[in-house]
Image (cartoon, rainbow over all chains, first blue to last red; front, side, top):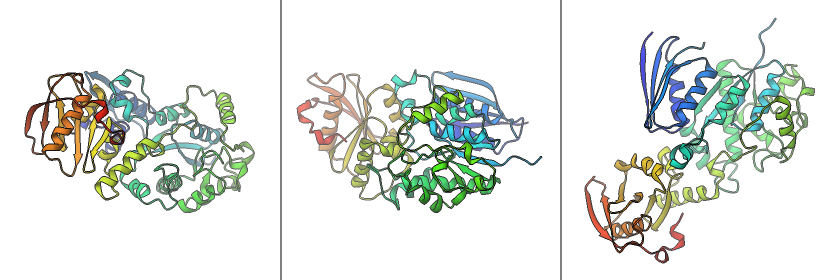
Length: 76
Length: 348
């Protein structure tokens, strides 16, 4: 298991989701990905994308517009 | 028992693609979804920018549809490849800058590439004959199948019974009798089917999902090309067309003026790329200057125009800061322009 970071700040949805999707495709089950974003839609969209693709959201928070999502890679 | 056949559904986030995918799922087919991001998608952007919209619940409708269906959704960035469709549509534009037929052909072609790569059997779309004036007509639907390369692997479950049999029907992967014969612009059959499946709270039926169908947006895009003397764009260009007031006081420059705090914050991200102005003495917007040249008279003109949109619009003078292309800032006072001094044709 390894920990990775993704900077998706200043990107508008769905780009943070696309970047997350593409990054997770390079990772293996159990890896952790920290996604930093600023589009408030990312909280819902990345969460929904994780649910339908079998990944877990370990943490999701919005600190005055700075969004952090910690994801655990699951799925196939 | 053999593995189920697999289909890739084009998911826009609207009702038709939701229903089309569910109709095929009901027949035991494994369905996954694909959603193409062109940069012109209405969804997401402007309501992520404007402060007044930030408090509203947000959802990406394509993801919502995938959750309702319980399917995987693959979101594909086609921004760069899509430029050629917008700039050189073989079949021309619709009422505005919308190249709907070329767009559908391109997306089905990309879906065909995807199913070839991933070992899927056929493609599903939510198209309905007569639903859209350009891409969903009886005479253009075969064009989409032919020119995309999908041929008879393209199944339109909502109107399949009005069309020739496709491969999934001929091979018995799906039962043609359990597909539909919808046609026309009416939405009642789709709404009835949605109710039958228990879908509620779906996105506005057949809602416009592309800025290129919008007259005002298309006008701004045409203005951008006219001013540049060439037809090209980058993602930042088409994002900025969605934000703020756009005014062109001179043929060689235009101003993008924020309308509220969220837009100001968004435009601030572009400050290093553009000359810009802001009001200092009064609350007011941020303006980016997009132009090939911008001389001293233009600075004064733009500052007076900006002051008109600030809270100092009725004050005798407003202090404005101008930052030039080198990042050098200076401040000065101007008299705000009166509404009568702003010709209507400056507004894009």
